[in-house]
Image (tube, rainbow, N blue to C red; front, side):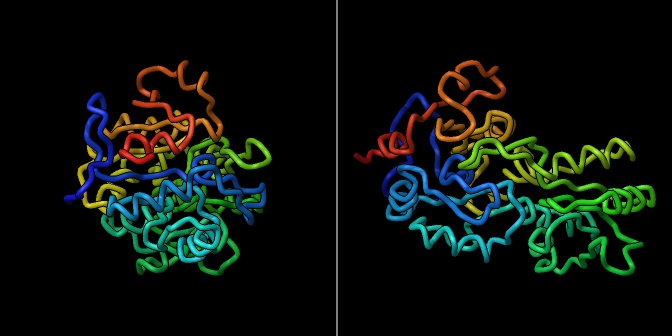
Length: 285
């Protein structure tokens, strides 16, 4: 994919042909209920400039509570130029991956929004309060604040009967306007795995399944993707594992001093004190 203006002119960094942005802590801060957003400085200008220059970008969140078709319009209402198909979630990744692995029927531990992308991909989804949860090919754990022991038990039984375990996010917490908020799928999957000892297939960041889908959507190799995020254990591990270029922001859970302390496998190629610095690398002012 060719562009009139390269994504950055800093020769000390490898060429970047497109970007993937984290959402929470990078572009916005959500409230604890995930129903409202505070746009972070420079986010609107950054994405608008990329769009104006024809530089491809997507946003990849580890959140699964809302399908992209519901969440993206809320972000656009705040001025962020994010189309529905440019907002990816772990469920987007699961919907791309599961059919290729022969998964046709899934037990979902999560809100209705967690299974939306799977249903859209033609995968049959069932929830623990449905009748007939037997005979599933996989268990998929996402955002589930109302999880009960009944849900844990149903997932364990399905796995004992041969179902694969898919997990949206293995991150213990994420940044919100109110501070760190617990990642529910992390806690739920820990319980299920403790009981079943099942290996998990991670679909959200830092999974390479996620980065491969990003590169596919951008139409570029993984090595030319610029990964912008606030978490060394999430975005930066994904960037380093996939050979992409990592940009660490200081607006979320990591401050500049935190980035400096990271080992090489979790360290960004460049720390951004603000998203505006990325505009400078793009040749903007």
